[in-house]
Amino acid sequence: MQLVICDDHPIFAESLAAMLTARGHDVAATATNIRQLPELVAKHHPHACIADLTYEGGPDQAEVLDLIEQTSTMTDVLVVSGMATDEARDEALSRGATVFASKGLAGTALIALLEGRSAAAPAVAPIRERSACDRYFLTDRELQVLISMMEGDSTARMAKRLGVQTATARSHVQSVLMKLGVHNRVAAVAVAVQAQLVRP
Image 1 (cartoon, rainbow, N blue to C red):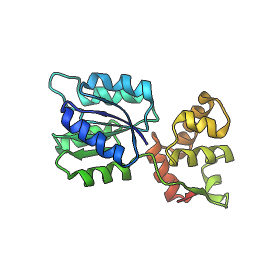
Image 2 (cartoon, rainbow, N blue to C red):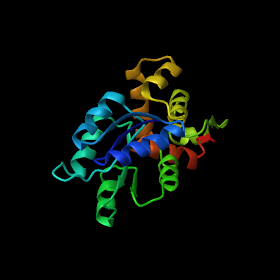
Image 3 (tube, rainbow, N blue to C red):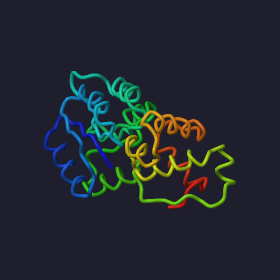
Image 4 (tube, helix red, strand yellow):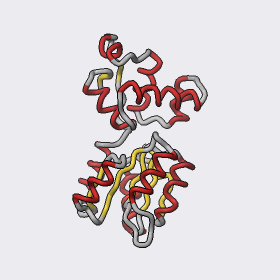
């Protein structure tokens, strides 16, 4: 899974990056300035960005989350904050964050939480019956796209796998999200598993 990390405490960001890299994830970039985050998301199109969205003198987290969503609907936002209040959590989740966690968590617990709610997942196989797919009006191609999303493919990797242009792959992804009634890949994965569209 490709990641971007942003935190104004370099030691925390570098430690988290090292732990995630050791687990086989690709940390494409780290930053200490929240204003850099939308630019890094636009540049790398990561599966997810991990960030503390509360910075003194910086933009509020609502503004940052909106900018990220405008930049890439394929990137999940995992908020890891030192200010883990109910208000901050509710605001982040309502704005589209996938996860809101406290920096007070143990490193192993934090990584388990991030991995468990990320877009990347073990390889999956499609179901053999069409009934579930028909319920959501998914085409065979869209089912392939859904499987590719569950396997954590970037848009470019998905396009290569399907033998189509990147713009076409992105269009297929948007169609799948629309048909499943969700706004991001993590939610699409959850619906797919629950509806037995795919089998881990």
